[in-house]
Length: 361
Image 1 (cartoon, one colour):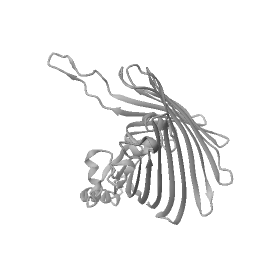
Image 2 (cartoon, rainbow, N blue to C red; image 1 turned 135 degrees about the horizontal axis):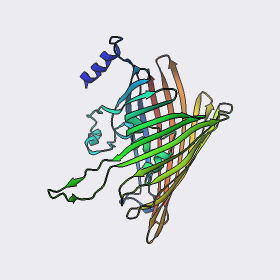
Image 3 (spheres, rainbow, N blue to C red; image 1 turned 120 degrees about the vertical axis):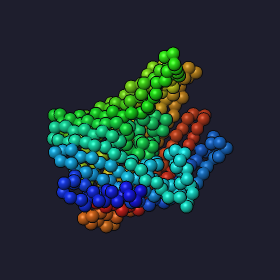
Image 4 (cartoon, helix red, strand yellow; image 1 turned 90 degrees about the horizontal axis):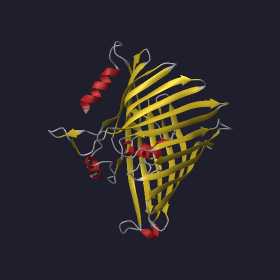
């Protein structure tokens, strides 16, 4: 790892014959009090849990401007939920379970890496590219229909994917296209040429949206659909993101998105996500708040089952120091979520936390 970092720093200060390379990033320490309550129905015999733990994250962004609109970007961070290391051992896959050993240290991975080109008319990115689920909650609904709330695209996908993006200037806005590899399948045949297992091609998700402004009001209608073999879930999602201009320092936004999987032989469902959002200057800091009303209906031959979700995000961001090379930020935050299923589930979770952040560039 030391050799890898040395390599990048050498490039940063090398001859002008090299690409222009810049570094930026952030460091964060986040104590969290996490309360889960299953109420009367319980979960594996447990009714309620409380846990005080700490989350740590460091990210280094490396941007290489090659020239003529061409560039390459990568990010170094810990590959785990939203790039955090957790002192309670929370990990996204088995090799990271060593995080619960407090003598262990977070590993460093390439969490983003892509090449790209951008002109006034069009641009593209290819590799492990980024896409914001905070700005476009439809990603949460489409890719995580069984966990719609609590920004699952950002947490579980690290807000990135294998694939590519294309943007084209059109009229008053921009057309945005994405292609994401969801599942890599391998076709196997025996020596006689007969298919072993299921004959399934790779699964891709394709997204298309159009971002534009009318009188400083921002609109983004969009659609996401999966391309998959027969008898494999292939949902289609569509919706609209909306934001107002700022009024006396305050901005309001909303999202309405819907999803559906109706492929025969698979678990069928319908889902929706409705979000109302407000941000603005308040005292020495800024308030960031939104509320979700979400729902998923699972379809069975015996009848439908409704999962009803609510989600509150309430944060207050205070920049305590800001300089040419970075800033120091404190952000207390409360995230409250619920999931209810009639006669089966009554779940709530509260994440009470405070983020201590240092950014640099």
